Length: 444
Image (cartoon, rainbow, N blue to C red; front, side, top):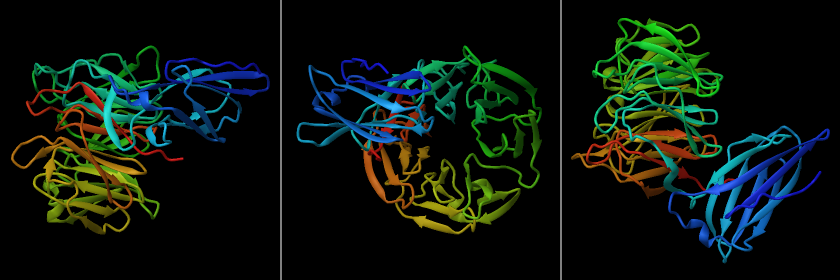
């Protein structure tokens, strides 16, 4: 097997994998927030391949770094962790790739580097800036659909953020402009797009399925209009097999594979705050909370109401946590978060989470961290910070400034353990183009 290196200004890294005479090369480069000089102080790079576990060090020479490795073609998923150390051996920058199969493939990966436990601007932004986006997670990144631009017009744009190279790729435009569209991520790259406001600002009930896997920019299937189900700014909560409970009035059950939408008569309405987890007893469980319920409701094939004044709030989020739990956080003037055990419905209260009461927060959780970003304070000021917590213990890790203070944004966990913040409006009510990335401390 021949050896070579891929030279870049900051990093040249080539991973060679071979099996039965076939070879592949994975080229790796680094990126940072626009205008950042973070890597100027890096004197040593530490590259960790997670499987097979391998650590390689490289010193800066001639203004850059070069690393070349030979690896067995196992086909096992592996991630790259890149740490940047200064002249004193202190960690000043870190980044991680999503998992990829180590095999005879030729591809490129771009790793976003930042100081641990910080938020920085992504290498690219949302053009044009939009609020009221439909957002969802994909296996390789995130997807944003529709929205409202600075002039107040509904958009037909759809974009995919790729966590493997931190690019933003335009998909085929929506069949019609929509703001506040309900977006649900299904299996095998399918995305369901329901309702939203049209160009006249009227709530609609159209249902489209978007296949993100069809080149060059996706394909739509039109399931038609669903009379009686018009809504915008709502949420689709997965309940298995490409089925979703759609919040709003009436509460709806969406079967993505057939394009059917039916009323769930057990509840008159569902609030736009819900999440699904696998409970510790092994049962897939959805939890909804909000003022229209007077507390929270647990769904396990049927709805089970739980009156609870502390959960009867608006402007909040319900987020899945590790260990079969969900969190009710932010909203109105509530200063405390509620953690609900999906198996038992037991509730624990966590005072002063987030650090200051606010509504309209962007909230997301990974297996390690919970991020509560931005929002609107009592009195109307837009929050300038994000609080980061341990997602298991809910202990505060750090509070960090946002690049752009915002409210009404969305946060999406990425497959490389970062969290992406998108959309929302600033203190003047203008939509925001900047995408922001929370980068955690490395896990090796």
